[in-house]
Length: 405
Image (cartoon, rainbow, N blue to C red; front, side, top):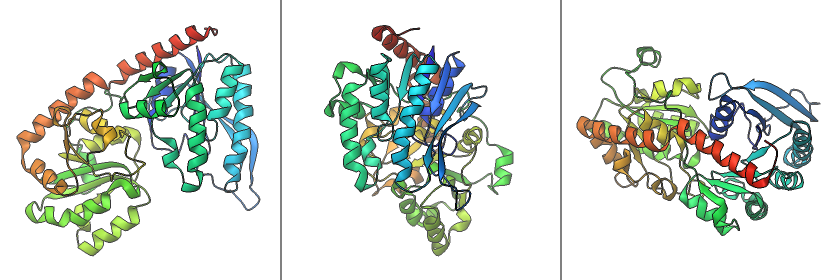
């Protein structure tokens, strides 16, 4: 079976996310997997470097799994603001058309709408190839306000016309139906993680030494991109209050992002820089080793359009490592993770810090929550189970469509 995975972010620069896992796991099942991406965050090598309109090919790319055989094909673009997306609509159309014809594609797994969603739907229908859309967000909410309406209308075109939609959460299943998808074509497929990589382990002495962490530190961890909505500025603003009661508390931030300079300034002004460690982005293989340094994980996301219906994979990674999580009550997360039975303590901004403090001081509670979270992830989010389900869903759509196998 030959599978084409289409998305519109930079395969190499994007933090490891689900589309890496899906594509690479399918390749490990023995299928030929070709991915198309978008060179988001492009850089000009010189003043005269305006890009290209060809296709660059990368063999055996791997971000989430060893021994992946995924082939990445990157259509060209014009390296000018706005023109990059506009030219990509054309280059992606012709690149995908060529791949379908030359590589005997059996099914398309689509993650994107604005750049290549409509072309994929058209090409899939024309060639009688099933298009399976993976809904992981309300895509128009992620864009600049200028682009929200065009993206929203593109969603209304794509969702009713794909053959199957795999929704990340119940909230997203409702959303795609509101935009025209037929309910019987929408399937809930929860996010998954690699439990062979993300699992409980003793503290890593090398990492402790490398980042000057002490054995008696009560470590609070956050992993990921420091977006404006991450709530890290709120947490740091209130961190001195926690330190008054628990001087051993230490905040470990594994990641980077737009908010970094602000939180560094805040930490300096509050005189708590020595209790905050920022590592920058780390390799995917190192992430579980960092998580296992911590007693508590946090997800203080603010409730905004971009966070309302998502479920960050990092939450499952924390839980798989048996680390309890204090999290703001976001509707998308709550629709999947019930609460303390899943290792999650929900708390709004009024008592977020006190919930973290109580967990840091209550080893038995941490142990109980950690065990519950670990069992929940083991049962519901194991990649070894979910990738088989994905495989079955793809095969069903191929058989229903009557395409070659």
